[in-house]
Image 1 (tube, one colour):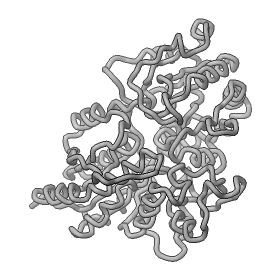
Image 2 (image 1 turned 135 degrees about the vertical axis):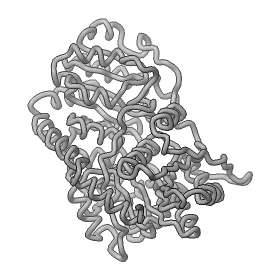
Image 3 (image 1 turned 90 degrees about the vertical axis):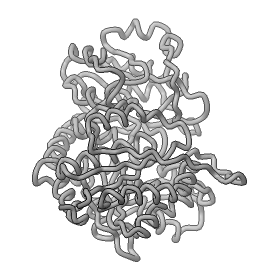
Image 4 (image 1 turned 30 degrees about the vertical axis):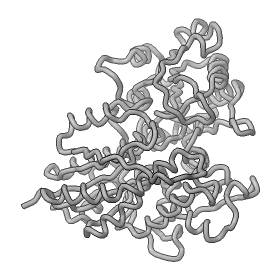
Length: 484
């Protein structure tokens, strides 16, 4: 009798891959005889190394097998006016169906494939699964509120004629179960309805309705209104919504080398954790902005000045500054702290703060008793890590869906204070704003958020415990796959 298997098809970026692999680990805790196969397409652009992460997972979990799909290439006559790197990634994933088909057929020779779980970037694989008679499920690795927006994109497209970027700046967008949004809160990829990225994501949102189910990496108690709206069919008024399985919060244990968020080089205890051991409980503000988040040299100086003036202890992960526009880039160069930070900053803040170059073990830092606040880029993996650790946040979005996440975190989830940016394309934040928000979070203004986070930490633990909401959802999901 063939071994039962579940195949996971992830986008190659580390922020997409990590929660997908955590789903695989979770499945193995319930079914030790199950085999997990992860399909990995080649990267369309440099999105951070995933090789060390894959090596660590493979060593710790022999039942998880990674399949590197052959590289794809665009036709010689391909051209696009889209300014987004993600457009190239989405186009290449569209062309990957033959490779996905071959991989599924090959795996099926020795295994009985019970389900294909696809990243929402990998929507075109839905037709491959259907052609092979394999149930296909979407894995949505962002927030539940974000899922209501994603499901609502086709409705928004049909009921408007203008691009989001052309709407009045004070236009209020309403999605069931989510707080009101402004057009500028939505991701840049969907701002222009004539852009290829918009077209591809609209296609993905439409195709989601044909999936056998939607797996969401969220905690029901964190986003009750959004989850209820989806399950009640309010996000898709003209047809059925696939079953929703909230199996979160899935967070990395910290192994695997994810830049800026857990794992890391070597096995020795990082210096920053030793430093935290000597700090008072709940006294340190942790600043880290994910595996792709970067700032200009000018912005780094503003952050430093705000930190120094705040008077609070801090642990700050600094990466080499962006070389072009925007806050999303990958740099392997080690930052020159002496040149990047204000003169004398490191000396004046010695003992009260520590600056770490490029990487810190985020999960371990957030779970350290000395950590009392987290300045985050609002990436969903980082938000869930903070929720599981019970650490209140300051929301400073940089790219992707993070601007809408800030609204959700502040208005719906009540887990963060918002960092307010200056008007303009650069969206810079002043030293005064950094100082104000840190003082606010660590002082009386942040008390309600601290209490809320401690409550949510317990809710997260309960959800993941036997009989908890995430475990019940996982059992229902596995039951739908007819796994023995």
